Length: 295
Image (tube, rainbow, N blue to C red; front, side, top):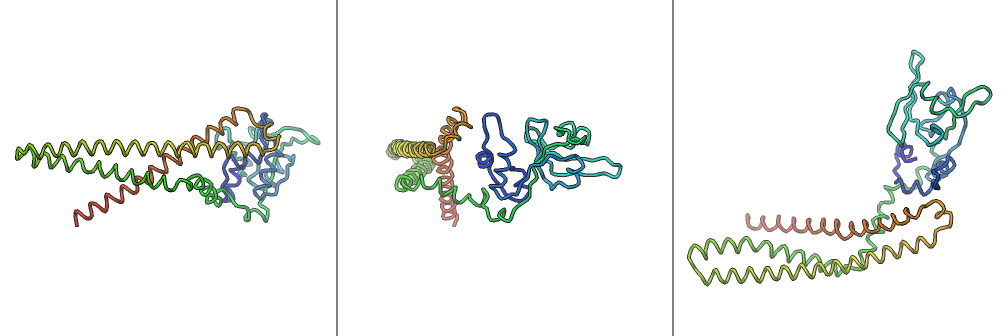
């Protein structure tokens, strides 16, 4: 379904489509795929057709029941002048393949009706609702707002983190200048009192840097714990509202995996996003600092 939606210019995540296909422990049925297709705006019909009907009448791309155990997408059919037929198949279990008639029939044909070999296909076409239904790209803003709502209650703590990061970086930038002054002035002029002053200053700055780092780590731990609790609580509340048939289609490991995914979400919110913001601020500060010095 994702490949066919992409063919018509729409984008959906696998998770969204899996939820709409009603996947059971045994796999997915053609009815489930049809329901997912209709949910995102397709008209569908499941048919049992012959090979000739497939190449002459079927609207491509379509979904075929393959080897009696899974589904593939037929997205292109070429009829050559010498009578040969090439069928382009996208198999989610492997890759894009090209089949000739004989090997294609061997994988697709499932039944003989009225002395004619037939196979099962799901034919699809966009309905008038197709363009009015939001795809995953259009809903990305809502997804971003979903993450932001977990960060907004901690605006003051984030401000403290940014200030701490800037102070720590500022202290780190002072050390090279102190070392330069120690060598150029203290050691060159053999000024013992100046050397002592620089060393004491470096020691105080080092202790200050450790203190800032400790406070920053404590604030991060506090926000991490709160966001982790909020994510798990919301997940459990959502889990309690799901219908019973949802649990018939899921293994215990699937639910545990979802809980583990919340850890990755938290790592993104508190790791990657913070580092990106901090790196941008430091880069802006350095560019401004060197521009002032050069100017």
